[in-house]
Image 1 (cartoon, rainbow, N blue to C red):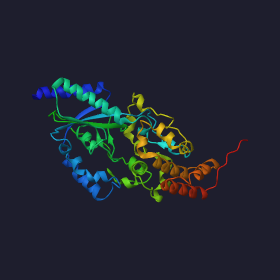
Image 2 (cartoon, rainbow, N blue to C red):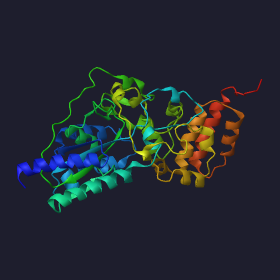
Image 3 (cartoon, rainbow, N blue to C red):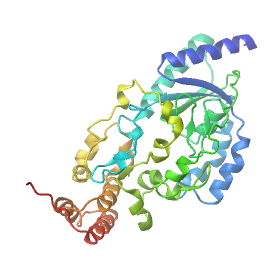
Image 4 (tube, rainbow, N blue to C red):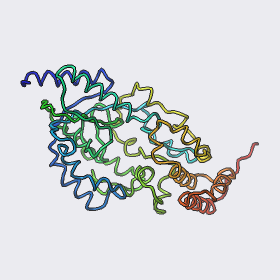
Length: 359
């Protein structure tokens, strides 16, 4: 296939991707040596916490051709998921409400994007015949933000998120590794400047420096990746965040350019954008499994779900109803849940009970 044919194919791939519902399609080579010292230093300082897979598969992340032999290019795609342009921190002040990261309020994006990537691969096959490829949607050791940055989709901001100058950062990334020698797009340029809004907004001060995140202090890590007890000194800082944290995106000035998603699957389900902590804490395991079916929330399991909610309840206002719900969990089968419930009760014991009355 000649250069002109490859250029035409690359243009077609981008057009097909748009037709399939991706907001952007870009192409990168797979030389990630520029990112090697950053990843190795991050791992050496144990900023990955208990995410041992990050260290175990570090070389595969840096060498895509070892993950998928004969890979030459990464076709990177972006899918916006924001359903609102409201970037207020007010929901984080509603201490009796659960804050769930925006990306997890609707259906899990993994299957949706993988199906779209497969359709894109099928279109390519119809045009140029069988070719080598493999689709990734946060499903293997891939440095997706680095590849997206190399492909010109945006730049890795000080909050370590990929930022697009025309769409902000409320989007999912996925990749199609291929052996096709497609022409590549120019890399993205950094546009954070002197802004440090994200660094200053982090509730747990998890950013050691611009572009350097100590995951062990990050609320998204604590509430999703960590499977053991949350460090006591960090619990009060988590507030009402029970699954993930959006603070660094909520304050990012570039998100004034947020593009709203038309994907109905990304709309909040089961009232998870405004549910009360007490309501969620009273779910039994069957209810949890039923209402998180097809949701990213299910991956943390019922035990960690209760752990996170117990912390949030401990940070929230005391009331007879909350106290009763916590008391009922003191005999929970999980030692992890019981320990966080006891912590929450101690928090409430140190504060006056708020009793509402009708006048």
